Image 1 (cartoon, one colour):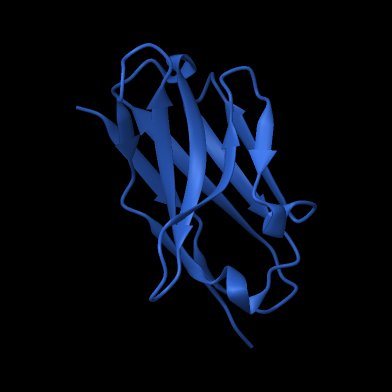
Image 2 (cartoon, rainbow, N blue to C red; image 1 turned 90 degrees about the vertical axis):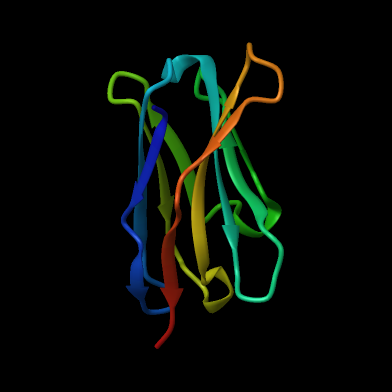
Length: 118
């Protein structure tokens, strides 16, 4: 059974930081690219950042310089370090695994809520 379990969300003031974690089980972690997506109230889900199995990252323009995605293949975990948070970063953040080798195979976590507010 494949599981992606996110943690680390919460309430933070503008300018603050949070670190999200996503622990993955049931798949060969290194066979998957990983990504963080988010969905704000009333908006569509959007890609925030992604990382290849070798650790090469990509970011949405609005988070460049503020967010850092990383992964630890030994721990089957992907992280999202979020700094200088803004109210517009408020959303449910989802972890996703996308297979390199099995066509159209992806898995999602249940999400963790991040609220940026004073």
